[in-house]
Image 1 (cartoon, rainbow, N blue to C red):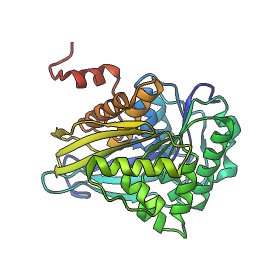
Image 2 (cartoon, rainbow, N blue to C red; image 1 turned 90 degrees about the horizontal axis):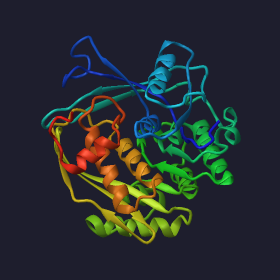
Image 3 (spheres, helix red, strand yellow; image 1 turned 45 degrees about the vertical axis):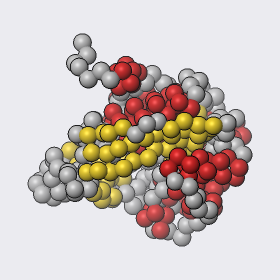
Amino acid sequence: MAQGKLVFFGELLIRLTAPGNELLMQSPSLALHVGGAEANVAIGLAHLGHDCAIVSTVPSNALGRGAVAGVRGAGVDCTAVTNGPGRMGLYFLSVGAGLRSSEIVYDRAGSSFAATGAADYDWDDLLGGARLLHLSGITPALGPRSADAALAAARTAKRLGVPVSFDGNYRAMLWEAWDSNPRAILSELIGLTDILFGNHRDLSLVMGQEFSGEGEDRRREAAEAGFAAFPRLRLIASTARHTVTADHHRIAARVDLRGGGHQTDQIDVTGIVDRIGAGDAFAAGVLHAQLAGGDARAMAESGLALTALKHSLPGDASRFGQADIDAFHGGGLDVRR
């Protein structure tokens, strides 16, 4: 199934957003978008010309079919999305403004995806010939069956020689909802990972170690500790975000390799339309440059471009191409004709 493809494993979600900057339930209408952490990265890379496929499970109803149609319509192969008992995972968003932050309410317990386990996926078939497997920490946080499925996918990828990309995406409330051991599970997953999206806080959580430096020094210290603890790791990427107001953020991007790294200058992102999925856009940008053989600087700058551009676009996923990245770096804000 996966010959030459980038394979993504995770839950598809439907997002329902209050109009404009209204609070939830302020008016009787909601805008619908399809997303999910792994699907967002897949959509971002598909728009950059990569051959992407997602593995997931949705209910056999209008919501499940609509979610699959939305992801397929964005250029992602959904052949390996199956139907299962349960419901569609949802979340609700109220977009912040000024000094009021955005608010998310999740309604995903009992979803079709969360009910699946390792035995529900034939990973040898799904990953045979794949170019990459991408996972996030949200999947193992959903429950013991999802954790087993994520670990099975990563173990199979390692056995088949398929590189693993993993976004920490730590969600404390999800882990606390069941009798979980996030440090043990995430440590094993990162031990199977080649490319990690996570910062010093993620590594501190997994390793039980505090990093004392400031800014770039602390991030490099954490990266070196991560490389020492996890021999398979060869790349760690992260962003640093300072929130001025809900629609004015300052963002820098960093990529660390075993032999060095690069951190971009901080940029101001203003007039924010939608920040949801910005981290997934960053992952897509980094992977895009990495797959093209780019160095740490190229990967950091590509990731920064997509994460900044995502703030201008409603919905969960980046839908920008290489021309948009080039225009961003060129500073071209005039109408492109």
